[in-house]
Length: 450
Ligand code: PEP
Ligand code: CO
Image (cartoon, rainbow, N blue to C red; front, side, top):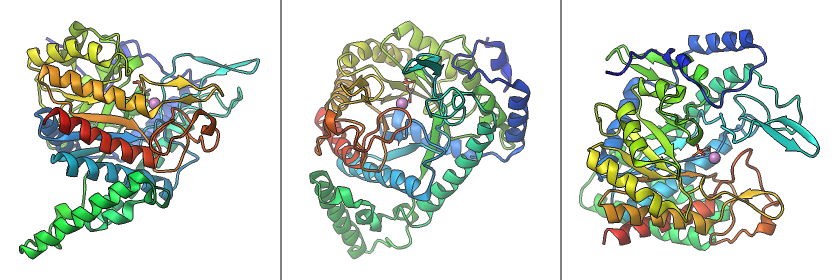
């Protein structure tokens, strides 16, 4: 029998990757403030997402989880949010239209601020300073002072999440996401490119289909499914004090929900079975995820499923594999087999980013577009071989014309990386690479199921 859970029971477990706050009284004061604020999302919405993910687990839908590696306090604007949403909607259209299944859209947005680090300290020239841990903790500037964790940032993260979510809700329900506007989602720099042209062709076909439906007497004007979309929010539940402060009891069911986002996930560095992150997330009612790297064994994955989803609720648990292009097929197959045979109804998603990060000659962290596609191809092959559903992708992207990942139709080279390298953490796909990826993914899955 599992031990009883409370929103604070994680405090009895080792919590990896927590900031070294210099003043705990100030942290407690900040968290008390956040705990007094309204929830950002409602339990009913988290349940709707779980129901949608249950369809993914059953092989009837596809998950697109995408957004920044780390949201920034500085790059916080309507433009920035809109451009990210635009590219997510475009990718979703490509996937839906090409695969013929619903696409569940989840942003790494409105709360994706905290970053785990492989090392506590970073070397900058001859200086050793604390690592950057995301804007919810400290600042990215390479100075000792900037890297001191500042608890006021916990409160700022809440406010930025609230504004971002507010705009997302406005855009997705207020007409921006209308299927009649599929053409308008294309950004200028994408429009003339081959990927942009391919998207335009698809958008024209959607126009024709809408016209066809109208001609057949379908009322496309008043059908809300054609004018509105659901875009859910998610982030890595890393700073557990912050997550605890936003964990509230649902008045309808009496269950606890982490109301900082619809979906929360556990990162590769904090997935210890007896650790605080697994303890915390096992007790909240939200759909949850866990990153799974190449060191995971079948026994460990089954134990994880038992801990996080003992009742085997479909849609509750998403396993996000991030193996690396060269390892994914061999590493994943035994895990798929074990989970399949255990009867656990998980969503399997592929994060093709975090196992493929390399350092370019100029010192920039980058990822090559072909490695990203290769990992997804291996992921799809592994599922095909085991008779399981390659349920989705989890990617880091931006709508903007950045030069952070190499390759793709536009062919960003190592030499181009300095041009518009804007991420505050990991390299993201730009708008063109993202759309290109959506077409490639749809082809991979279509071919596998042909
Ligand atoms: C991330 O998603 O940004 C991340 C740090 O991933 P992982 O935990 O898989 O390394
Ligand atoms: Co990342």
